[in-house]
Length: 170
Image 1 (spheres, rainbow, N blue to C red):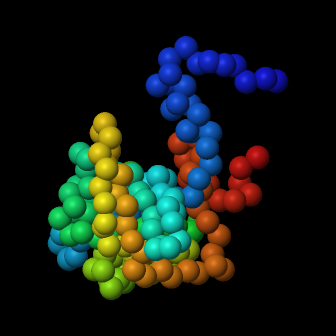
Image 2: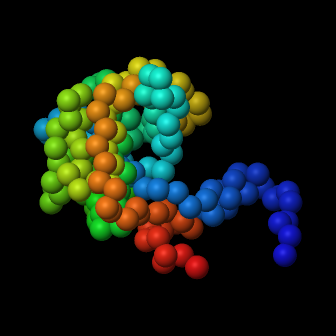
């Protein structure tokens, strides 16, 4: 079966295409104490290795956006399949907001000050170095100051509007 091209409505076409792009799930965090904020996101990638740099895309209307700007740091927590509840909390699926989204999970303060999920598959703590604005989002570029991994964990995936374990998609 061939791909039907092009989609009549380009916005709906892009939404449909992005739903079919399986990706890792991250929680991007910033701030400290009662000022901690975070969001579940899939828009994360490395930019350069020299210096080590990554980028995340964050909606400007969210509290996490403001926390990143105000604190000048962020941490990308790559979630494992056992952390679906963390993903749901920061995706707004539990009714919790703000610092309450962190409750019930163990966090470690990174050297830059951003919270890292203690049981993440990987955590990448960054100092914010550049912000680019486009439409509703900011692209935050951060220099990596600290990175930790737990390679024995299995990643959590996002596909077609849901969270999945590897092997669960067929």
